[in-house]
Length: 65
Image 1: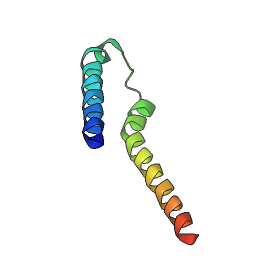
Image 2: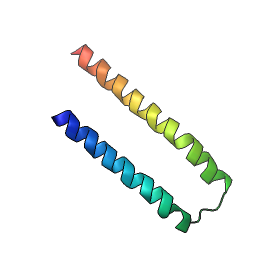
Image 3: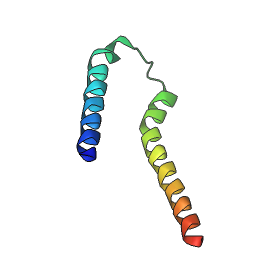
Image 4: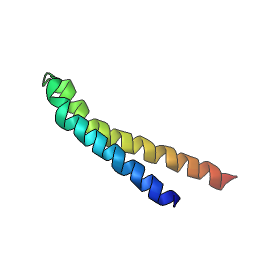
């Protein structure tokens, strides 16, 4: 039952984010400058990289104990 509630929460958040992007994003104008484009392209990959590095570090410390 807990996994069903979790999946339902993820689904609702996904719908809310989708609607926000569809209806609110056209109201926000962002200038297409090089730093903004680079950050939009590289930020997701860097975020995942940092998460993986932190998990590896946590796993090493738990294995050393």
